[in-house]
Amino acid sequence: MTDQVIKIASDMTTAKSALTKIPDPCTIVIFGASGDLTQRKLMPALFSLACEGLLPEQFNIVGVARSDMNHEAFRDHIKKGVSAHSRLKPKGENWDNFAKRLFYVPLQYDEPAGYKNLSDFLNHIDQDVGGACNILFYLSTPPLLYPVIPQMLGQVGLLHEADGHWRRIIIEKPFGHDLASAIALNHTLHEVCQEEQIYRIDHYLGKETVQNMLVFRFANAIFEPLWNRNYIDHVQITVAETVTLGSRAGYYDTAGVLRDMFQNHIIQLMTLTAIEPPAELNATSLRDEKVKVLKAIRPIKPEEIKQQTLRAQYRTYRDEKGVAHRTRTATYAALKLYIDNWRWRKVPFYLRSGKALADKVSEISIQFRHVPHLMFPQVNGQLLPPNVLTLTIQPNEGMHLTFETKVPGAGMRTSSVDMAFRYERDFGKDTLPDAYERLLLDALQGDASLFTRSDEIELAWKVIDPILKGWDEPTAPSVHFYESGTWGPSSADAFIENDGRKWFQTHVME
Ligand SMILES: NC(=O)c1ccc[n+]([C@@H]2O[C@H](COP(=O)([O-])OP(=O)(O)OC[C@H]3O[C@@H](n4cnc5c(N)ncnc54)[C@H](OP(=O)(O)O)[C@@H]3O)[C@@H](O)[C@H]2O)c1
Image 1 (cartoon, rainbow, N blue to C red):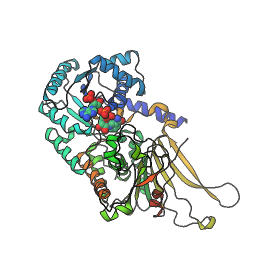
Image 2: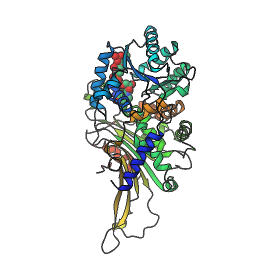
Image 3: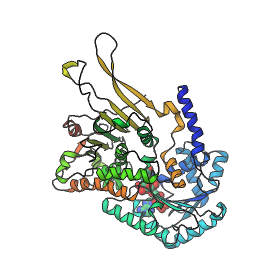
Image 4: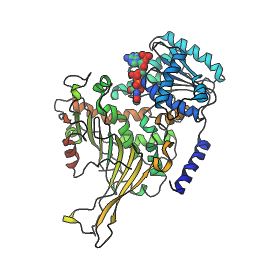
């Protein structure tokens, strides 16, 4: 690490403690607390926050689910998850202090009596946190319960804010199955609480590299003048997974890759790549700018489905347990979208995502235009490779820029070289907190900037819905197949090569 980077990193640590506002005393109530997400992500994140002194002095965490458990059994269950998945290991005083704040209340999600009991319990432990009455509810259950639990909480008055006390509710993805169900869920939520109380989570937005897109674009003067149709040829966004279905067949076969990856993560990445600089960094300004981009994404018309979308399945998908016999659910998709505004007119955004692919990687690559005049002779009159800026979201978070240099020696031969920045190399190994740490802390602090507003989520569905409908039509493009461990079907190459472009090889930075 260079001295300069060490200095930046130490400045950051000082700035972190100076800038981080410790949340108000509060209770966090997690529904579905016996499940995978709580054990693998939420509790490890809360434990790390507690160890770093970022939770208030007075806080409690109440797990709620149907499973029969007492407080002690719940603490043991959570300790296993924290041991296996937390950045910081549960030892000694750190764990004991955390564990004594963990409680468990069993409840049937649709029975009012359970909520009355929960309300009484919260009142009881509330005395221990100084009558704080601030409560963050986290819905970590299957989505069918997202409309049910808030209604029940509303009925017993648990979402009612009074005397300066806040009540907030985090809702996991997926938010809706299509536009109509997302609108219906928003409507149900708005019957029992205000939009400002609702935090729709997409953990991608909690990743440091995603937030760095804002800093990269708007804290550096050199990129913004180039960030438009005059200099950018096209943008590619890739979210690739190596895993197949695992135990998620029941959900995945009814969802598919468009709902699982595009409607949330990839559209969010596209929006952040394309937004105008917000006037200030707060939830309203940021989300207003994102909404402007979402409104400008041109919906794909039925007659464009064949040219602008492609879907595929990994070859063995239909043999997976729990998958319908002749299912047409896509495990891979590629889309070409346009944003109809001054900045992005005629700049294609190529988006692709799939399961069982060759590598696990999430990247945004921006290809700049070719130089307008070629001074340096190239073999067979080829063009010089254009500059490409790549933001890597995972793994090996960082960014790199390719540019041309002269090859040493006689003549004027040129070659592409790469200038790279890597978080881990420059800021140290353990500086990247898990996305859930960042997002839980933001919600506790009342900062909704990295959460999705109701209009945003509905607009994202407006982009995806016509494609889902188009794929259901009898005239829909056929489902292609690809071998596991490859980069998708060969038709995906043709999809972009027909426009005279190529998918970038995803970058593994050393
Ligand atoms: N796991 C992840 O990495 C991840 C990532 C992003 C988003 N999410 C979303 O987060 C939510 C929770 O994920 P998860 O993986 O923790 O889910 P999960 O383990 O399948 O379910 C959480 C809990 O909900 C209860 N439950 C399960 N099925 C139910 C049903 N049919 N009816 C009523 N209760 C049921 C179970 O608790 P009881 O039986 O004890 O009530 C279960 O322990 C899901 O909506 C998921 O889509 C998960």
